[in-house]
Every structure is written in structure tokens, then in C-alpha cells.
Image (tube, rainbow, N blue to C red; front, side, top):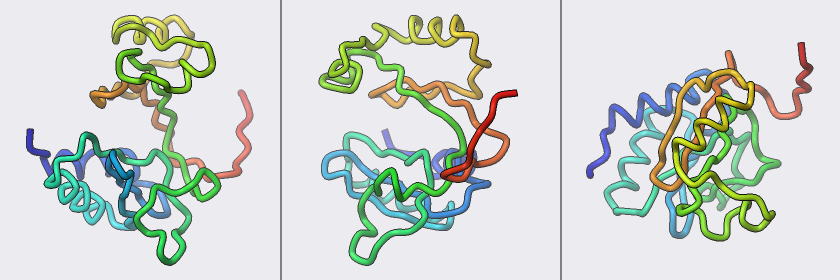
Length: 157
């Protein structure tokens, strides 16, 4: 299926429309990608990646503070994160993630989407802003009212 440029731009705007820093889009395989300051440039980069038929294309949940010369085409490390627009834990399903964190830690992913959704519902957490099925994982997204800068302390009310 061919990617829809308007939908890609809308998704990037929803996630990072209020964020500062570099928006990172990468593809599976060699995990190469691009980091862009402009939402539309990031969307065009995702379309260009789609034309190469990668197994998957991912939008990094955090923006990057910067990239070092010669390293513009990589995903970035945790320490290079600048802002986070929300939370999006990976809820599986198990079939999609052989060898992933849950398996290595002795925990189990939910066996299907319905179970994952019921776990989130039973947790007492607020209803997610949206659910994303990437084809390789199911993610409940809780978008914040504004991006949270790296190093910001958060207190409970």
C-alpha cells in the first residue's frame, strides 16, 4: 500500500506540532533516517523512505536536541532527546516482537489487541488520546498538553 503524504504530515503535526528540536523519521533494516526541523520536510522524508519499500517507517517519539556532523542519518540516543509530546508504551502483541524486552525480562506481551486494550482500561489510567497499530506493535498514546522537555521533573497532583 502506498503511503499517503497528507496523513503522514497530519500524524507528524499531531505528535510534534508543538515540539522544539529535530523530528526524526527512520526505517527498519539499517535504521537509517533523517532529522528535520520542519514538519513537512519530515513528511517528505518519510514518503521518500516509503518509495524504497522498507518493512517499516517510524517516527521517533522524542525530538532530538541536535545531531553531530556525520551522524544526521541515525536515530539518536536517549541522551540526545529534547522534548517528549506524550507517552506511548508498546503493548505487543506477542507475535510481533520475538526477543523483545518483555520476553527478555520474563514478562509477556498481551496475546492480542483486545487484551492489551482491556489491560489499559483496567489500569486506572486515563483513556489514551489514541491507539496506534503499527503492524508490529500496538501503542496507546497519551499526548500531553504540550511537550515535556528532557530533565523536567513532574509531580503528582
